[in-house]
Length: 480
Image 1 (cartoon, rainbow, N blue to C red):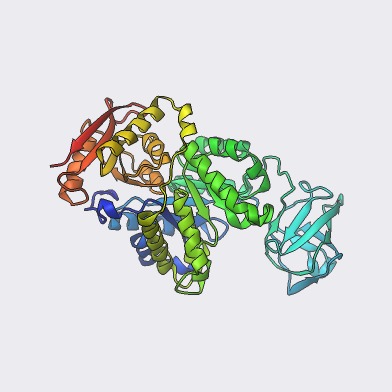
Image 2: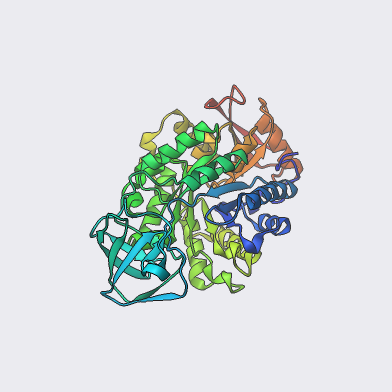
C-alpha cells in the first residue's frame, strides 16, 4: 500500500497551498513525533547532514516513510548537505577580541600550545589578502592581512567581540572555485541516494557549475533525486538566474545570506528568488527563523506571523522550520501554527499571487497547454485541476502559474509524488498508468467527499499514459 491509498484526510477546500518543511533533530527523534509532524501539516522532512550519523538517518528515513503511509499523504525527504561549512575548531573557554587586534587562524591548530585559533577547514588555499572574514556567525568582522606559506591566516579585528569553539565563519569575498562538494558531502550523497531521498539541498552554491557537478555525481549513482540550490552566498545572488535555471528548486537560506550580503537586501533577494522560481517552474523554499521564538515559547511573535504570511502572499512554495522542530520545546505546535497562518492567509489574501505575463512570451508547447488549462478552469469555475504526470513536469508548469484551483497530480511514480509534495498547491496521488487514470481518481475523490456532485474539474492527460512529455488532451468534467 502506498501513501495515497487511504481515504483522503482533507476536503479540497481545506488544502493548504504553501507547503511546510520540518527539520528533524533531538526534539523530534521518534516515530510518534514524526507522525505528529506529518499530521500537523508537514509536507517535507529535512535531514540536516551537518549533524548526526548515518545510522540515525536510516531510522529517521524509515520513520518518515512509515508515517507517510500511516497518515495517507506523500512526504518529501530533503537531504541537506553540510557543504564547506567553515567553523572554528575546538579550544577551551572564550577568546576575547578587541578592535584592531591581530589574530591567527590555521586548520587543525592547537590554541593552547600556539595561540593560533583552530579552524575546521583549510582556508589558506582559498582566501586572499583584503578579503573579509566574519566569525561567530557574523558577530565579529575581521580583514585578512596575509596568508603564510605554512597555512596560517592573519587577520585584523574590525570590532570588539568574542570567539567560542565551533562557531561559524563566513567569507563573502572568497571564491571557492567550484570546490563546494566536500569529501563528507560525497559520502553523504552516496548514502542518501541509496536510501531514496527525494531532494538534495546543496549548501554554499556559488555558480551554476556547482549544480552541474552535483548532477554528474547523482547520475553516476543512477539517482533521480532533485537538486535544491541553497542561496546563501554573495556569489549565488550575483549568479541567481543561471543557478535557478540549472537547479530543480531554490532555498532562500536567510541566516548565512544576511551575513554574506546586507541584511536589508534579504527581503529583496527572497522576492527575486520566488519570482524566478515561478518563471522557470522551480519550487522555492523560504527558510531560517520563521518562527524562531517558538524554540522556547508556545506562541510566535507578531513579526514572525507576518513573515510566514508574507511568504504565502508572494507565492513561496514552502516555508521551513529549522531549530523550531529540531531543537525547540514546541515542535508540533510550531507546525500547527504555521499551517494555521497559511490557511488564514490564503483564505483572506487582499491580492492573488499572479504569474507574470511577460514570462508567457517564452511559452513552448507544454507551457501553452498549461496556460490554456488554467484559463479554462477559471472560465468555468472549476473546483480543481487534475493533471496526469509521469515526471511531474506538467504539474510543475501548472503550479508555477499559481492557479486559483488546487492541483491534483496523478502519477504512477511514488518518487515523483514525494518530490511534488513540497510544491505550491499540488496534492499528489499514486495510481497505475491508465488511459482513464484522471477519471478514476476523480470518481474516488467524489466517493470520499473530497470533491462533490456538481463540481467541475479540468483534466490534463496524454494519449500515451506513462510516457514523459505527451500531455496533449484537456477535458472538462462535471461530477455526478
